[in-house]
Length: 330
Image (cartoon, rainbow, N blue to C red; front, top):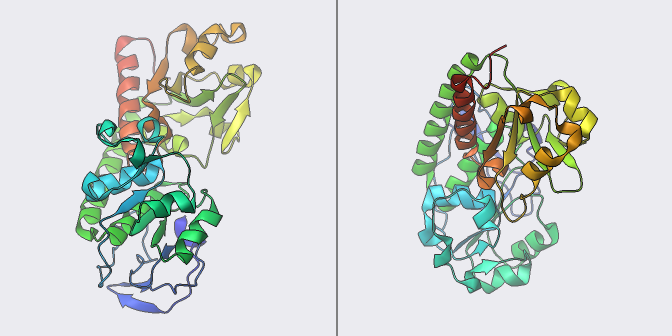
């Protein structure tokens, strides 16, 4: 859970039935909001109860925002819209899921390097990053006086909720964040309630760039997507964690009912071709009976609340296979 990884210096203050923390400017939390004027959400949340959101307390409302990765783009867009965004990563078309014509941003508004020089050139008042991005750049931005919101590494649904909470606070969109969380919880519950009707359908989330295959095990958003859709993750069942390399023999051992892959994009373009052209996989039932489900590349790799979109689409595709008779419940 995300709360086990928080490290804040600062004194707790009462917030309803829980507590909140005001991090010092020089504190070093693993998931951090580098500003002294913003309150961080309560630590007492659990999966069943809505995570409390601290009200805005005088923080400057940012109007020049730079989300630096697809997850940040998805969350910022849904909380504040495009009007306050001044720059986007050039990978946004492949990996973000927002329904927007990105051609409205000229080349000068799309960046392909996450460096302090590039970020500072946009004169932002808030930069939203993830901890896997270059820490030297993040530190340079902070030293330059730029407010930086570092989203959590997403391992589970609570991390996504935490990201929505803190981004809503940083943007001054607390009410919108609360509404988004309520809808997130409603949809997640609906998925879980409908999951049982798919029985013990097994799935494997698979990627192949042409030089070897990878399967998604536990500790991945893909694993949670399968669970939300009511599928058994055969990679997780075999003890795999993270994105783990798999060969032909492992694929045959997995024998998934359905294969879940990405639709072609700049980076994901050969997975289906590999599956259908590999002679060693010619007997794999998911291939023989055309039970390969392709998700849009943005949904396939999302680490935002749009993971629910991916799970809903996957569930719909599996239901279609069941209704067509190409897949039988076990």
